[in-house]
Length: 190
Image (cartoon, one colour):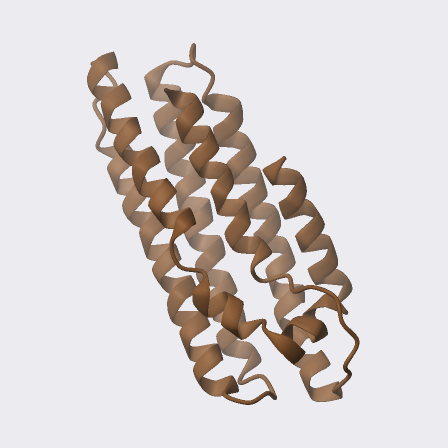
């Protein structure tokens, strides 16, 4: 049962990948500057998300005590919530990317990142409220959490994908910090 939770959690790394762009070579100093600012801010947050995923995966072996699973998951969800909020703040702070429809792309991505942050806060509350004294109830509660996580990782990083389309994605791909964020998020998934 806990394996489902671990599998669902690794989906969190996918959301970070959406911010790491992919190949290309068009150059715009303004856009490169924007991408560098975002990528530099994303990298430490990607590492936090990766560490939170790793902690949960380590703790979700079937013989872990419910209290330990609850404590680890709660902290991990708190860390993920803070990381997504920080990524949203970084995209907001970087300003509007110098591309067509940049303002709405930025606004939608920030909104989506904040929604993801809020969703992880809700998951933390859900985990905190689980009854660790009753193994069966705890297991059922974790199934619900895993279901919510699956929805979260399957749903929307549409705004992030739109933000990084075209020139923005190419500019991000040129940034060293986005390359390493992508590499560490990929490693977290495998």
